[in-house]
Length: 127
Image (cartoon, rainbow, N blue to C red; front, side, top):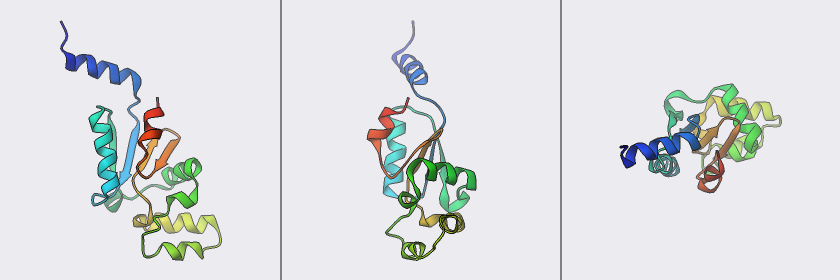
């Protein structure tokens, strides 16, 4: 006879992929809320601390393709205004790679799908 806990694990294992990635900053309240969202639903995820590890060019490009370049920029950052003056999108991407603190967090990826900010409505639709 199986316990309720085992049944829950099997159910979630079948419904949710295990390729959820959360890119965030430890001091970001929305990042903590995103982690809590997935923990409460027993969904496996990988956390990447942007302050320590940053984000790779390929991952950033994938997220940009999903959400757009403007959504990636944290408008509350003191240097966010400087990004507006860069003419080419490639220059903006390069600046975001150099300084990941300019990124709006959390960035949550599920394969090619991605969100920026706290978006539980979107995450609930991911299967």
